[in-house]
Length: 246
Image (cartoon, rainbow, N blue to C red; front, top):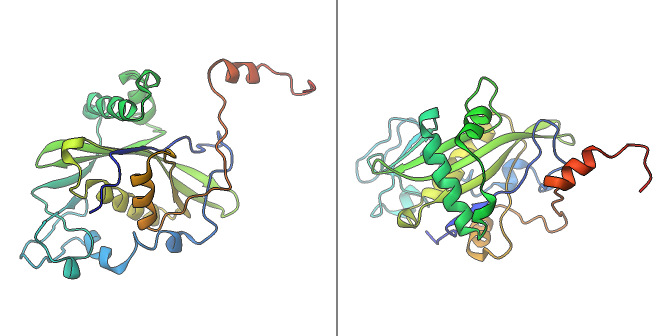
C-alpha cells in the first residue's frame, strides 16, 4: 500500500453543539466513502473471512494482514489475526494514548501544543459520559497506532457524524496497512451508528496523506475554512457582552 503519511492531525470537529458547521461532502455518505465500502473490502468485516492462504478471522475487531495474499482475491487489504488487532482502549491505556498524542505532535512540528494530561483523558474519555473514544492498533502484540474519535451532528442531514480527531501509526509499523485498517474499522462504526458523515482534517503540507485519503474516496472540502477561538481569545469572547457593538 502507498504510504499514507505517518500521521494526520484531524482538527476540531463540532461536539455536543460546541462547534460550527463542519466540513462535509455534498454527496451521500456511502458514495463519498465508496472506496471504504467497496465490495472487495466487505469481507474484512465478516466474523469469519476466508483467505486463499487458508486463514480465517473469528473476531470482528481482529484483522489479518498477509503480504503474500493475492490482491485480486482478497482486495486491497490483507489481514492476519496473529499480526494486527484493533481494540477499544481502556483506562489502562491512558499512558499509551498520551505517548501516541505526543508522538503525533512531534510529527506535526508542534510538540509544545500537546499539553493534555492523564487526568484530562480519564475525565473526558473514560467516565460514565465519555466525550471521545479511542481504538488501539496492535501489531504482533505491540502498540502500533491509535485513532481518537467522537460524534458530532449535522443539522442539514438530521443525523450524527463520526469525527476522527487523531490518526497515528508509529514509524516502524508503517507500510503494513494499519492506518487503512483503522479507517475502515471506523467507517464500519459510522455506518452501524447511522452516521451521515465520516470526516477529518489533514495538514495542507501532508501530500502523501491527502493522496491516500483521496484514494479511499474522501474529498477535500476546499470551500470550507476552519475557524478557531482558543486561550485568551476564547476567554475574551466569553466575556463579551452580546449587545456590545463590534
